[in-house]
Length: 139
Image 1 (cartoon, rainbow, N blue to C red):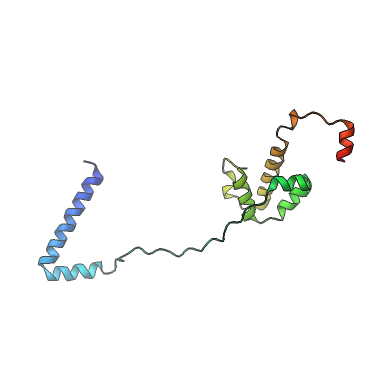
Image 2 (cartoon, one colour; image 1 turned 30 degrees about the vertical axis):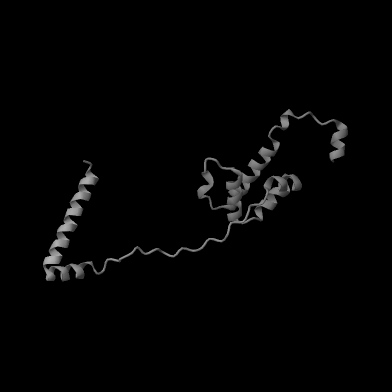
């Protein structure tokens, strides 16, 4: 028999003995009631602050393509810490969860910018090089 089962059996026997003695001896029952009166009859839950509803984080890939890299970094600085954390979590930018304890928004801005730009550039090495006429069209 495991030690927890033994302990449970001993405690059950002890409670049964106390119930028998309280039934036979009214003074014992009164003393037992006085001792156990301070024990709450139900568990008390602490009130927690209700969290505001989570908003969908902005689509950073679209914003980066729209604004460009430098303007994207400035735009990220305008976001609050909670939004930056949501962007990291939603897009899986920190699989090692290193940023979990960060409190500085600049760290998040750097992480998001680097990850977003890297993902947007992923595979660009396999695209054909732009010809001079294509470069002038995009400028």
